[in-house]
Length: 635
Image (cartoon, rainbow, N blue to C red; front, side, top):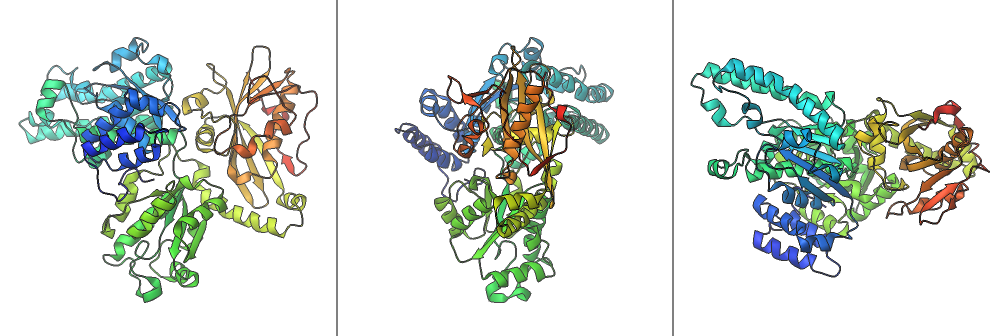
């Protein structure tokens, strides 16, 4: 469901929103879908803050205690009053289907809290640590704010100071650290009476913020948000002067809400809740005009407005595709006519070769999107739907509410900006597998063609010529391992989603030892398709903390082979056994019997299994193992 631009329904006033929330939370069971839909319709920051307070109150906590939603833990620190942030983040995250537990340090305690060992926050064990600073964090250590030599020196030193703080915060709290560049308040500059001095301050401040932004690449497990993006979304930055003086507010409610929304996007990316496929309409969306009426030559693409607006949307789609977003088309048209326009119009940037799926017919689009989801082996909640027609958008929301439907403006000039601003596809980092994703899915289509020609499953697997290589976690593949744990839902045996900080510590400081696997065949490389977390108990027993496998390689015996290799490695290392856990979810049911099929037997605890290594399962004869036998080393 759309979470940033509304659902097309009328916005709800604060009083109506709160009344609706109370009614929805008070039901038996609580109507969580109604809660999300109502929150989508609350545009005012103060109203959304009030809604978040209701969700965080006794009634909200009771109603949400057993909600089947992914959860995260968030610690907040800052240099100004931020009391509105926890309820705003709660509401923003809930709109994305996430339940956050939030704890905040005291006013301007961001340095002292970490220096003291985080007494207020450490027991939370946060997945995310957000630090929102204002310019006072820099100027509080400047004796003379009009001495530009002193100000420049302070600005130059601040990125390294914040890097040291972030390192200490990570060592103390763990999790993913989320920093933000710092806006310069107008009073800081306007106290300077020369244009030369103002320009000098602006240059020093810009250079400092560039240094802060660079920390995302320099520090592990660190995200840096751009305050300019937040300001554009909020329409402003700074708190009212009276609120600044009376209550220590640095930022306006709209800016705090923009920050809360961005933190909810980071939380979604950390939990693998990022959308994967963009579904585009054709007529009056990718081009101006109805191709069935005006023909290919009559479509307006490029040139002048409105054609330029549709070209801009195509270019955005291709840029998303280059970073791992799958592209698909759902259009009510005659397919030969529409394909002729896609592939033959001289101004088209996006062609049919860029698509991993398409449904060009006269069937309802909700059913077509779900059919494409099944074809690609993805959940339909991983799809984002873009269509200029408000009737089609409303039908999608009603018939397939799990699909994110973008509320487009009337003017196509804003189509690309509206889609880009939503952040539906944001991830923590882009991997090589992401960049090759469209190619990988098109190869998968060719594999399906071979499967249809095969006389048996064994014949099909033999033709594929599959090669499997296990790799230990390294700085090169750690990002992909984190991504696999975050984004994999179907073959995910426990639902545990290890964060970047844990993966970076593979085999040290109490973290499991992580491994990944690469798969290739006669059609090309699948990339890294699996991740395994292994640990060793005090008695030497190996423990499988979690095992995940990309849906692209199901039904080839890869999961049995990988776990069979783990069992062989444990036996060779003299381990007395291997234990594993299966925790059922609404997505992983097809793998409920994976452990028993490999000779594991259930222990007394539900979902717990153990293999005594007396009789090891056979490995697939259709998979060539190309790594060294001793690759699995568990500390």
